[in-house]
Image 1 (cartoon, one colour):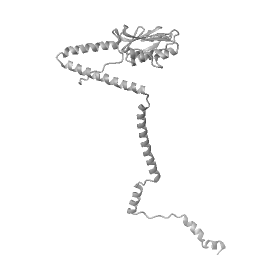
Image 2: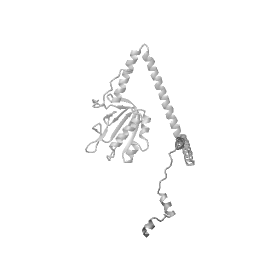
Image 3: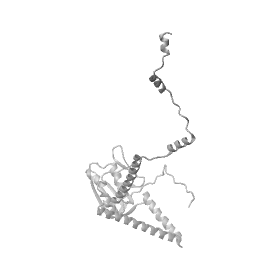
Image 4: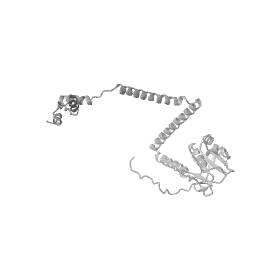
Length: 274
């Protein structure tokens, strides 16, 4: 026997056998049915940790704080107003309530008249009044009544298209029932533009300086709307124009608007339902 053959038959050292055993995979026995169920119950069960409980508590406290802050802000909205502002707000609410009450009384009175013996005559009178209102709104009839006249001297051609539009809008917001600018009647479809030379046009008609704006409505309210800081009058005066507002018991608006056939708007057909 050679030395090489003797070395092959030599016993394997203990350390080498241990290292070889580490590479073997030990197979575990399959779990029983009861053990598998216990594992599933442990996986499905929820156990809140201390961090999760702390986060939930902080979230709840944050929600309570937000609700309390919203209520405090809502209550502080009126508390932060000055006495004059609170009085004006109360007057406005009182005026609206009184106006709505009068409207309710008027509607009830109209209903009683329509149901009475003279219902046909009352209905005819109501239709006539409604026609007059529609004619005034459409600008097809001249009107007169209390109101204001605004005179604008634009010596330096500083009045712009936007300024004229703002003036008309402020009068509408103040309750003007009829408006005339120069010789043009303002209606719902009126528009302000400019021509190629930069001249201001109202419904395609040129507005020459000085400008005259006439409005029918509550004269005091309309004049107050023209005096709003930062409004129409202030804008004109800030660029050098002279503005004069005159209140009167009676002003006349005689410019008429020629109705045009609508191109796009069509009435919705009646469904027959009451």
